[in-house]
Length: 161
Image (cartoon, rainbow, N blue to C red):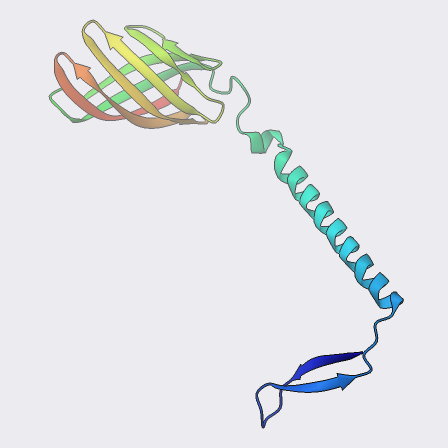
């Protein structure tokens, strides 16, 4: 059996040399096949381990427990654009995933387990939509709407009472 081998020498960057009497034994083929199987098995086991570690969620990794934001919240609205009052505040109530009014006006909306919140507030002919995030006992976000006929927008901050 005859084969080729590539070698580098100072005189020639890559020259082809002829090599005679090349042999492949059954033992070397078995070793190669077993190496591929072992390598594949290791890869599968490694991927399985990674999937289990990243897929299994601990309470800390999963975020706050359901109902973690339950309770009354005081929300302060600050106007950044438009002809509306510079600041207003309103009490909200969170129960599970629902956000509602804790006094004055109609509030509808929800909060997800990771704290993302989306609400709609209406009082008479005025209405505003807000989005943001609650973290622990506080939260921040943005709002926009029509208040007493004027289009306004701004930011909000919340604290759990």
